[in-house]
Length: 410
Image 1 (cartoon, rainbow, N blue to C red):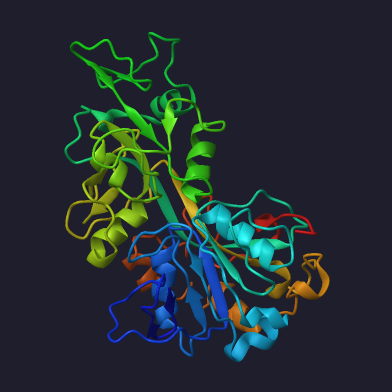
Image 2 (cartoon, rainbow, N blue to C red):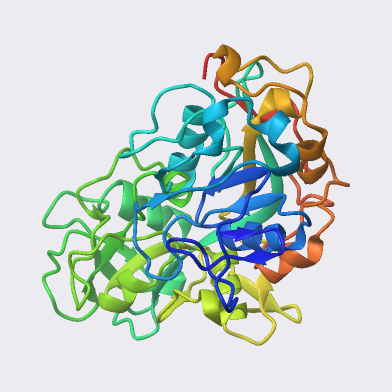
């Protein structure tokens, strides 16, 4: 976890090279959830004064352990508004891994249903859910998804991949692979691109131009998983798509979002990978989980630009290409009535913190909010600014009805 100006190195907390390690801090706001946005929100937390924000990573950033217990200490200057339940000072719960688990943990902290993990947060123990997937629009919703940056998602392979011409893939090729497991029934379940046939079920007949391809998806609850499924029309997890590594030294391990282990272990693997995360990890070696993963062109558009020249992100000073065809906004989810007095109560009485919170508003809402004003951090961590927005996107800090989700009670 990264908190305010304090770098915390206790068990399970994100490390930012502090020595010696400091005691667990008391913070006004607790953020959990998305792997895609954890680094930029960690850096934003560091930029805030007074231990205002504590941002817990999706997995232990030191050991990469998944699903361990974390113990935030919400309190501080905003505690009377943020945590109106006496149990909020003693919060221990399973570390949420991804956007979905973050959102469900926020709901649990509002007094709603348990988050489905081994241990759910108590009332008042989560304030912000980081999310790389957007809302299912519900104008009467009790949660609001506040956008703050633009990302895009490409496909990645190992730099040593034995798959030829994957830079020729189109979005339709990816739909035919991931959603349909090939365009014809077995044994002809292949997709043709760049003069080669790619077999997603491992049944290539061999010979010139025929190649098996292992299609990977990140873990359940991942915002990138939900976005990739929506973009490509994937229903459930088809038999040809895998969330466990099939080959190489890491066979049997779970595929973690924005981590290149799967394709580094399996040289015929292909996995969705946030372009912003790839750039962020390149820019910050202490955060690097790419291993040998490299990003690829889709539909003839390169994932990055460097001095206006298209490239695969490895060029010096490469930044996200905002013309990339598979792009998305990223969000922080909060209880809507804490930033908008007209929004409904989440529906769980005293356990739902529903006082208007000017501190939370000034941090996240509007183009002049602290986060939206920090364009340097947003760009350092690989994202593109939403002010002004790319065509079809929201503005940074928007919180209108079209960004609401989940009718009360949540």
